[in-house]
Image (cartoon, rainbow, N blue to C red):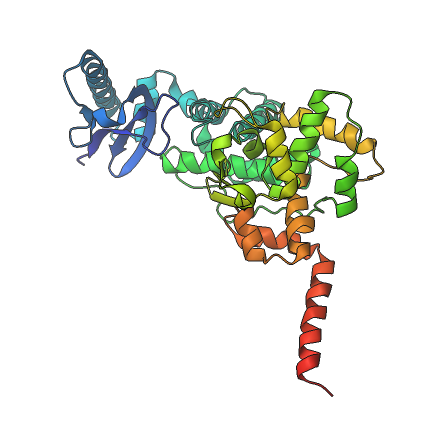
Length: 404
């Protein structure tokens, strides 16, 4: 039986490196089955010839990169021929493993996950966030511990990851790692992404997550009422860092910006003059456009914290973890008996500042940068006062029309 064997080099356009270069990947295809691996090479977007699948030009960099690509192609083909002498049925994964020279461990779950995190790190600050990288690292570490306890090994082949492995790891996160239901849900979503990548690259033939449902619990979202916001605004601060964190939190209460968005906010993001100023930027998390009118309180904070350098941030905050510690101390000095984190300010904007004041949920969703209005509807569910006031308004209008 004749075997169809192909080697293709291509660039990863959707995930450029920090340098702006595109990573060069290699795809091995045998009889319609394929697998992919990184060549550890990169190229300027303008220099890649998508027809010839090589670096264009005669520069030293182009010649050197093309020479390495030729060596890779030759070595892969030579590896394939050697495997064909041993067996008629050769898989792309077997060729890749033999070429990399590390045997089956090249398709190990931990190794595959580690490679993903390494590539993800290079995109932090461009198309990916640091907090998401931390999440993947946590899941990677949990998987290592689970495999060590369950299999007494440092890694397992990816083709051993089946639905039973998924179920057992899910159970281990809750019972052994003591993760909450929602934390487990987030970690399993991250794990599912890694497995899906392996399926797409042909390392796994069947997705073990097919038919496996992930669920989360709807938790109460803490937010501040008007009198609580005022108490926090007047709380005694002991140093400049506490003052900065408190003011940035208040700014978030009146704008809905998240921690990462506030930390990145610069004078160039403020447009307009006088009372018609507004924030025009993009959410770091979702890259959705934001246009948020600036009311009196955030306007005063902008004036107070305006940096001398237009490229500097208004609020050079410490880490989110440290901000939450400071907020905890500040809240303890008030009579507020709630667990408040920096993200609670975003909840406060959605509830107290906008929805409870009658701002339409579509506008609130737009200002929050939500990609799905169902996310915003979560806030509306906790505001019975909004429901009551709207029904009273509707009843008043109806009563005036249908007079008994």
